[in-house]
Image (cartoon, rainbow, N blue to C red; front, side, top):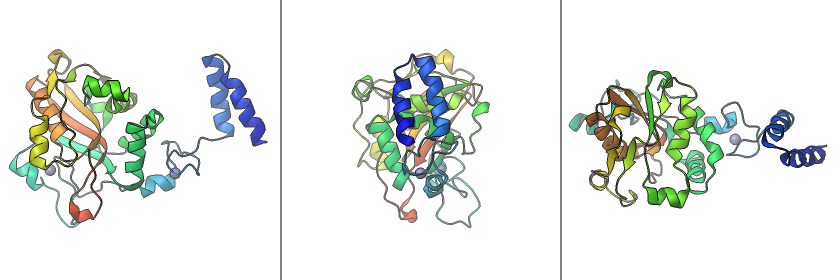
Length: 264
Ligand SMILES: [Zn+2]
Ligand SMILES: [Zn+2]
């Protein structure tokens, strides 16, 4: 039976896009798409199966009210973490769906480095599970990548996420407003201080009128120390943004979580 359905699927693929798309949609209801992580269970409405979603390590309260860094102790009253107290970030708040670890880390790697762009929609639906209310922003800006990186990768993963997110809000995406002027060294293996220095002065607001007086949501895939999103927020605030909030799929956490802390 399945063989017949698969043959039918391949047959309809040869049709013009609109007709093929209709039959593909029809077949999706007969053969539900599989979860892109475990490839065993049917993907749920968020694009991943419920087992995989519960295996992701959600960033849960309590966390820093500014940068969203989860606190190791569950007993503390929420406050600013030490980094945000010493030097408040330029963004108002940053929120992430889960920790950059395990299954989610693998999936983000496939999205970013293996061109698995079909993961953009499922990831965006995970981002909608954070406390960020997508309908309360005027402008959604992806963290840009340098044109050389764009040529190598073929897409900006943050732009794909931003485009999916705005479908659930009232604002619009501004893909060209923020530019990465210079190519910086990869942030891998750098200390917090080195990361800040590495991205300093590397972003530019090309069209300030796109953000002046606006509530801006900055989108990225992963946040580590926050050096990149903070540098972007700095130039956006200087260009007149009312405030900047940040949303990412995942973020690293401090060693108290005893997780491997890779890179971003
Ligand atoms: Zn799954
Ligand atoms: Zn903080």
